[in-house]
Length: 133
Image (cartoon, one colour):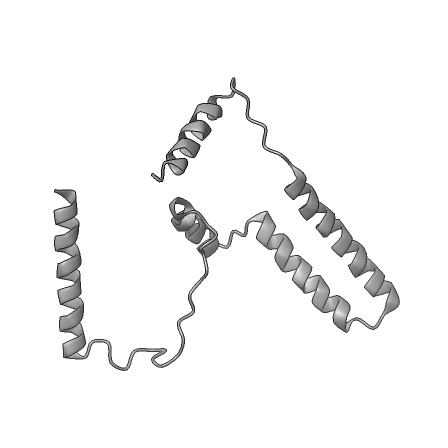
């Protein structure tokens, strides 16, 4: 029954879009003829995409992305830096950030059977193995 309702909604939406197209509602829109600026969120699990988008719109940047952004900024500075002392300071900063990134990756997740989270993880992994989400 739910599938029938979703099918009905999809058909209705498609009809409304086609009607709007015929009426010219999509003509002369801002950005017409330019490529869309689509974000690649394929690496983010589907169930987390909306939360990540809300956090991003609120100005929050996950530590991994903040580090990546800072690394790129430091690499740019190093590329254009003429002063030897300043270059050394920037290289030291870069080393610290790279160590932080490496330590973050090296951390293992240890969940024991006594951990209340253990059962949830096992259930989730089992569902994924069976092809269900």
